[in-house]
Length: 519
Image 1 (cartoon, helix red, strand yellow):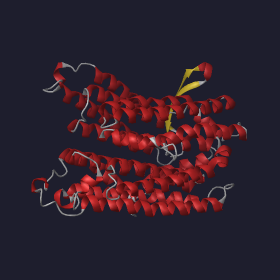
Image 2: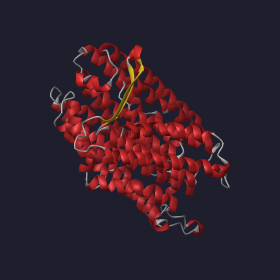
Image 3: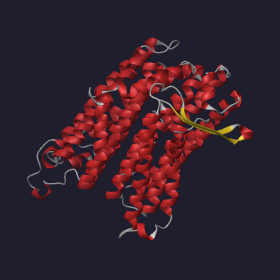
Image 4: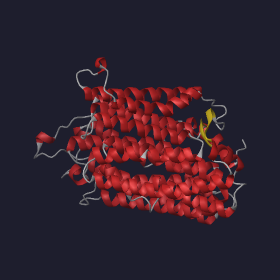
């Protein structure tokens, strides 16, 4: 188990280095570009297999216990250790990252985005995977920061070199926002580590803030929370996200929405909640207020983009929807209750699956129509996907209804549990305030349903334009697309029909986390 977790974190880096080396003569094949893309599929596939093996070997009877741990002294002068481990909170995120990265590598093998050499593309994809996996596996504050920052450079280049229009401006905005937030976060992490006398996240969670004064905790949560909120992204620190998603290649958007946004909310659960509970209790109402504003703002922005004549970009619309969905995650965390935090973790996974699928689908639409502009896609009578490409239209409708929280699909449970958490927040939090937040979030669910149904009506329904019969037929779902999207559909249904699979992992770990390390 120790070896498997170390392999999952380190193997992508070794794979990235190997991708940049000349391929051995026997592995070059007819096309060197396809050879390196095949290398990417092989490495990410091996990491996914290791992540699944890690899940099978995980002690599901004790998910609150840190497992597969490695603890080696790295910088003795600062007491910084290479400390790795997983529990019921981090394991689902680890598997989600491995799965989405493998599906992106598989998709890119058949549909490589236009840009420079595939060698650099594959290497950056693997470095990105390593940084994300390390973020969910490390148990030292400084290592967490290094892993948190490690993903910025590869994502910057994926957007700037393989993106679409305005890609350079979007890439710069992405990295400047996140770097500025991270500088403040580092100060907060150093404050906690130096005041508590350790950077070990397990020891800090067990201490549960007893070694830190309330003023230190409030300052630390403010500083750490700012960096995490930018990555989440929380309104009003979200403005980099729509530009980054609109400009990014399809696989960049899938990974950005599917796993990178989860790093911010994971940091709130793993660091802010257990390490500085008094600081979180002081700032939780403000976090919840920003969260529900983000829910309403994201939904209204999507409605504005979806209306006829708005020239709204479908990728941009889904990016704004992420602001709303991550608002539910933050609301659940702000409730500081087991129900709310479990809902937040469930919503994290559901959002990764559903929004990853939606960005894959929008990328496919853009490939077929040459644009993601909603007015162009809708045309005079609708793009009529149900008639022209029924499988593609059906999948888009499935992704939309899953995203709006239809009962029986994964999106439902996260939103419901976060609102239940707000209904009865933790002791010391104002219940009238959180009831108000819950009511506002409820309005957000209605607005979410409205804009997603408008998108489905405009893009999927209608009849092909008679004046352009040659455009009536478009390619339906291809074999490689079917292979890349089916796991996301299946897991969305599985999580919706059998939520205990995920909640059985997260709940004991969350209970222990909120109880100060006591099972």
